Amino acid sequence: MTVVGPFGLSVRDQALEADVQAGLAAVEEGLLEATKSEVPFITEAAQHLVRAGGKRFRPLLVMLAAQFGDPYAPGIVPSAVVVELTHLATLYHDDVMDEAAVRRGVDSANTRWGNSVAVLTGDFLFARASQILADLGPEAVRVQALAFERLVTGQILETAGPSDGRDPVEHYLDVLGGKTGSLVAVSCRFGAMMSGADETVVDVLTQYGERLGVAFQLADDVLDIASDSHESGKTPGTDLREGIPTLPVLRLRERAARLGLAEDIALCQLLDSDLSDDARHAEALAALRAHPALEQARRDTVRYAEEARAALAPLRECDAKAALMELCDAVVHRAG
Image (cartoon, rainbow, N blue to C red; front, side, top):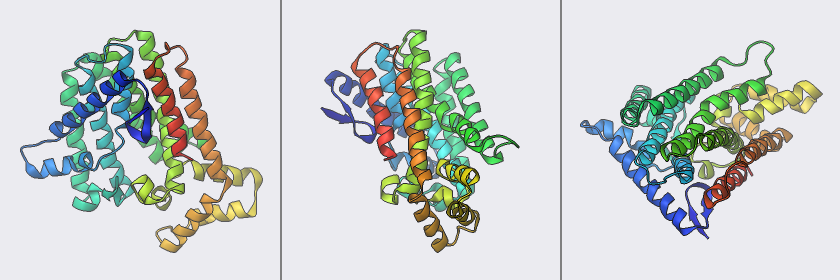
C-alpha cells in the first residue's frame, strides 16, 4: 500500500499511483509557470500560497477522474492547473474578507502586503487561469464560467445571509454548494471530460464532486472549531472571531431556538458579543468544542460524504473508483 495526495490517501495499484504522482508533479510545475510574471513582485505575491503547499485536493480529483478515460490526454494537467489557480485566487480574496492573518501555516498575503495587493493578486491568478482555459476549448470555458458564477453567487449569498423565513442551515448548505461544491465538481468533470470518458461517467463524477466538496467544507467548519493551528494551517476560530456563522454555530442556534435551554442561549449570547477580545474568544471556542452542536456538524459531514460515495455506484469497479471512495472516508476522518 502506498500513499499519495492529501490526507494520506492510499493507492494500491502501482500504475495508478504512478499516473497520479506524475500528474500532480506536472500540475506543480504548471502552477509555478502560470504564476510567473515579468514583474518580480507579482511573481513573489502570486507564488506565495503556491509555495506554501496545500493538499492539492482538486488536482488530485482531476487525476483520479481522468482514469475513467485516457489518463494521458493533453488537457488533463492544464485543467487541473486551472482549478487549483481558481481555488488559490479565492483564498487570497477570502483572507481579505475574513481579515485572516495566517493561511497554510504562513502569513496571509493581506497580512504581508495589505488588502489591495492580496485582492489584485487573486485577480491575477484568475486571469492566468482564463488564459489556460482558452486553449482547452469553448466547452471548458463554459463549464468553468458556470462554476465561477456559482462560486461568486455562493459568496454573495453568504455575505447577504438567509432571506426572511429561510432556514439558516438550508441557506448555508446552499452557500457551500456554490462556494466549494461547484469547483470540486468541476475538478471531477474536467478530469473525466478531458480524458474522453463517456458523458454518463462525466455526470456521475460531477455529482460525486459536488457532494464531496460540501463534505470537505463541512469538515473544515469542524476543524475551525476543534483543531489547533498546527492541524489546520490557520488560526483556530477565525470564522468565529469574524462572526461568520459556520455549521456548528448554526446548529447551536437551531438547538437554542428549539429547546430553549439556558446554557445554549448563554452561549449564543457569548457568540454575539465582541470576540475580538482574546479571552472571550477562547471561552467561546472552548464552549463550542464541548457542545453537542459540534457533533451534529460532524454527522452532517458524514451524511454528505456518504452521499458522495453512493453517487459512485454506477461506475465500473476499478482502483480509481476505490480511491475516490476512500476520499469520502478521508474527508470524514478530518472532521474527527
